Image (cartoon, rainbow, N blue to C red; front, side):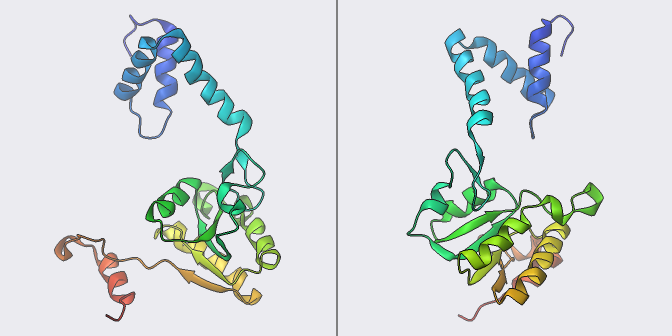
Length: 200
């Protein structure tokens, strides 16, 4: 940002630039937008950031973000609590909920096993998942981590922990997206599409 700008505006731009997917130009636009707000709008914006840190915490059951003891999904007795879909982060739950097809509950790991990044299994919410197995009479755990090296390693690690407990462990099928064109698909995607083919 140019040196001609006021220091508070420069500092605000730098804070916006720390957000994922926000470059310096976008950060500068956001900072200028904040300057165009009324004092009341700016106070409400700042208060929303402060409030989210004060009031939102992890659900005592699934580790999703909530402002209550239990998140709305865990508190909903109409959901199938015998099926748990294990995801990496709370935003993954939003993706599943948009499908309106999944009726079970979730468990958020808050990361993936990655020795390179210093993320060991102990740093994830795995022991909380294991505690739910007996308590909630869980029959199936769906591993819905991304099809990356870390996602696969995490799925395999948790699967090995769950198998002796007599729980069915399944993995999301990965393959060609709807509307995808075969010639543009990579080899791994095509292999997974073949491997996970269903009878029609």
